[in-house]
Length: 328
Ligand code: FAD
Image (cartoon, rainbow, N blue to C red; front, side, top):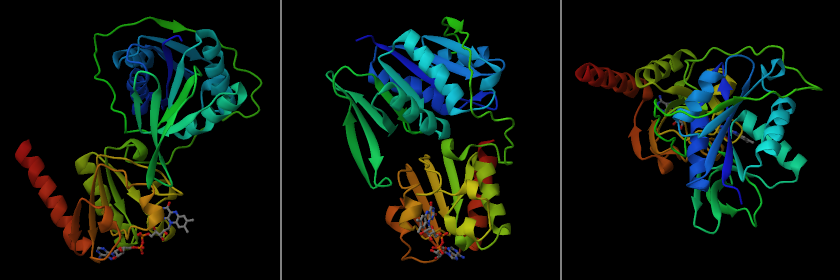
């Protein structure tokens, strides 16, 4: 079996998403001595992104630039990935379990009659087989999966779970610009109009401050944004808060929203319904602020504050500001 692994670098507004670097670390966990080949696609300058993939541990990189890759479509990106797979004949292919990753990888797996392990949070090679751990039943249990035989190891990894390797600025590798005629697309995305956000991507944020119905208004969310700014985090929400119109549905975390696994999750005025917990219970440290000491969120919280959020949050923010002032 060739020990070459293809990883997909994903650009978002010209910048690589952090999960791209995590795919390189994942490839090394599949085969410690694998040659890691990074694929970066888009329309525009790709050299910098290819160099960055190498700095994060890829051995070489392939760039494919085409006008039809300006915006993601499963047909366009799928054509390129399949053509590179055919040419490189890798033993494995790894992509982030992002919106694009969730969309394109099953289509490729189906087209090429391959197995796919999706949403892996840990990978281990015990010498005879590669074992993937992935959450099931909305994160309430984990299963371990192996790909039998010598089949291609095709997987997506959940952002924020497999630590990226250290960036080494001086690392270099061969970058090849490959021409692929991306054609016959049935769908072309002409323009993507992005919602204004604080800048930190919710699904990749290391710190998430999430508000629920207890926050009581859109104005109430302002202190969550202030705290997120101070901590360099992102704001999320329960469906209760979204339904009440306090914030946009793009912030919803849970079974029917985004799944997040930050280092720190602060739940403010969220009861902890099972559907909400499906999206955040695997966070590393959970802090809950709720006036009801019986709230279910306390069952998964590492630290709980029973109190009125309108009293607790300002104190919390003052403390963080004070700590920041002391450090600087
Ligand atoms: P509530 O349950 O109303 O909780 C508000 C909390 O705020 C309470 O615990 C209260 O004690 C506390 N509080 C009130 N005032 C204060 C105060 N001043 N200080 C401190 N605490 C205070 N929900 C999701 O979040 N994500 C999903 O993806 C999702 N998907 C769903 C899918 C389906 C099919 C269904 C049926 C439901 C789904 N839900 C989802 C909805 C879910 O069941 C809950 O209704 C929702 O999570 C409740 O939101 P909440 O915790 O903000 O509101």
